[in-house]
Structure formats: structure tokens, C-alpha cells
Image 1 (cartoon, rainbow, N blue to C red):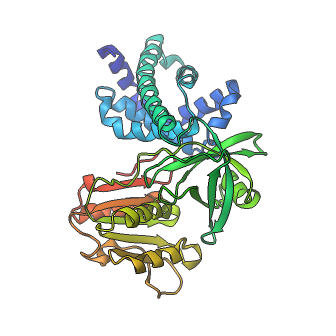
Image 2: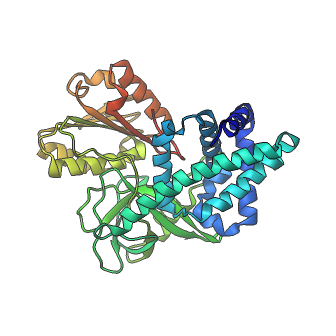
Amino acid sequence: MDARVRELVKATIPVLREHGVALTTYFYQRMFRHNPELNHLFNRSHSETGKQPTALALSVLAYAENIDDPSVLAPVINLIANKHASIGIRAEHYPIVGKHLLASIREVLGEAASDELINAWGVAYGALADVFIEAEGKLYTDACTRDGGWSGWRSFRIVDKVRESAEIMSFHLAPSDGGPLPEYRAGQYTCVRVFVPELGVMQPRQYTLSDAPGQGHFRISVKRDAGTVSTPPGRVSTRLHDAHQVGDLIDLAPPFGDFHLDEACSTPVVLISGGVGITPMIAMLNRLTATARARDVQFVHACRNAEVFAFGEHLRAVAGNNPQVGLHVFHDEGAVGDGVRLGLLDLRALGDVVLQPEADYYLCGPTGFLQAQIATLHALGVGSGRIHAELFDTGSVAT
């Protein structure tokens, strides 16, 4: 990529900052109109609510801002590549995306989009696409060559369905072919694909594998998205809760994800979660108590009240049977007792037992929750290298 191409791409930064979401919203509308066969690859709810166009706009802007040294975006590229692999984005999809992205730039910017500018963005997009294609190719190869692995979608049978709280339901899933399952890293996710009648297409959703590997089945724990005044209920979570029963078949992708427990370390571990962000933390906790009992583990969780507190009985049993595990639960409302504190999570109040200087911190939950906890950790002197976080949002990375 020569200097002129980089110069032209950087010249679009002010426009991307001001009109990026409008551009990417137009792009998705254009692509789905001309290539409706791609509808099954994308979360239509995120497109309709603006989450997906916003995530793409931020990614395009970040690429333009770092075009002189795209290597600084490696963590974000790795995160996105894992998400792409889980929903089945393949090399042949990138020319289609590129065609509609360049056409959208031309049609949205109008006369400001010169042929030279469009050609420059074509070169820049091609370079980025090559990076993703290579990264995703490695992920696909690893997923299908490991013991028990596979490529694409695999049929699973729901062998159990367990209510964990008023909002969260666990699904125990076993391969319908009776074959083995691959090992995965605690904290990773799978992608579920179900048919949504009102859209007339299959829809993918990524859910954390909420138990440690080696159980003989996969487990996902799904929060019912009840919607809000401005957003409709979740199409897939609602169908899973209401329409899918024990014995039903469902399609799964192999495990992917770059947020996972580092098992090579021997440091203390602090697991911090909010709401349904508890799911990867349960997988990590179960893995640690099964394979690394010498590591001190502090489990810190916050949720609204006892009704929505998932896995409470399991957590109390694990803490009771493992002296190296500490349990700290905060509820926004309701009664105190049984180890529960009332009020918002305050890491400072937990003291040195939890906030150990050499610990590694794993966090998962909503955006505002994570931003607050990470800011507190930084204020307490915890370096970024010991903070590992994932937002339960579209294309998001916590820093």
C-alpha cells in the first residue's frame, strides 16, 4: 500500500467521524437488497437497532486512523476474525462486501468520492480483507482438524434444559451424530443457528459455553431478551426459551473466541461479572477447580436481585468445597444474607483478599458495568496487561 493510498484514506477520516454510521447503514441496506442470500450470516436485530452499522463504522474509522500501522489493530482483528469464523464468513464473501462498501462510499459521498479515492479505498479494503481471510483460514483449519472438531454447522440434540434464574435457561447439547466433542478454552463461545419464521431465514447467535470442557456435552446459558420500550424482544433467545425442547435438534458452529482463561499462568484469579456476563466466569471457575486447585480464585458477581441470580446454588457449593475459592455477590435490590451484599459492586470495599497485586482479572458484562470496574482497577494500580475483558455487545472490546 503506497503513500498516496494511505494519504487518500486518511483524508476521509473527518467524513467517517461525522457520517460513518450513515454510510454503514446504507451499506448494509444495499448489500442485503442486492445479495439477500447473505441475510442468514448476519444478526438482523443488530442491523435494525443500529448496533451492527455502528460497530462497522467504528472499525472502518479505526482502520483509516491507523492505516500507517494497521498492526496496532491486531487485538481487534483477532476478536472480529473469531466472530466471523463462528458465523461462517468465508473468503468468497469478502469481494461481495467490498463491492457494496465501495459503491456505498461513492453513492453516499457523491461528488466528493473521486475515482482516485474509490480506488484507494479498494486497495486498502483488499489489504484488510487479506488479513482477515488469512486469520480466519487458520481458525477454520484448527477447528476442523482438532480431535472431535468440524467445519461449518453440526447438528446437536437438546438433551437437557435447565432454568438457572428467572431470565436464564441452560441448554445441554450433544452431537446428534454421536461423535466426540473437541476441547475448547474456558470462556470461548459457540454459535447457534435457528430458523426465525418472521424473517424467513436462519439467524446466528453467539453464546458462551458456560461449563468447563470435557463434560461430554456442550452447555449454553441463554438470557431471554425481553426487549425494551424502544427495542423488540430477542428473536432467537425467545424461540430458544419457548419453542425448543428436549429432543429437538439445533445447529452449532465449533467453539471460537479470544477471551478465555490463561491456563499457563499460576497467578491468583479474580473473576468479575455482571448479569449474564456470569456465563464465561462459571466455565473458568469450573475449569480452575478441576485442574488448578492451587490457584486462588475470587468470584465477584453483581446482578439486580435474587430472582435473576443464575448459578447461585452451584457457586455456593463450589465455594464451600474449595477453600481456595472466595465468593462475593452484590444485588442492586432485595434482601441481604447468604453471602449477598446489597448495593452496587464496589471493588474497593473488597480489600486485599480480592485485589491482590499479582492477580489476573477476568471481566464480562454490560458496557457500563465493565467500564466502571476497569476504571476502578486502573485507579487501584492494576495494569492493563492483567485485565482481560469482554463486553457482551456487538464487535466490542473492553480496554
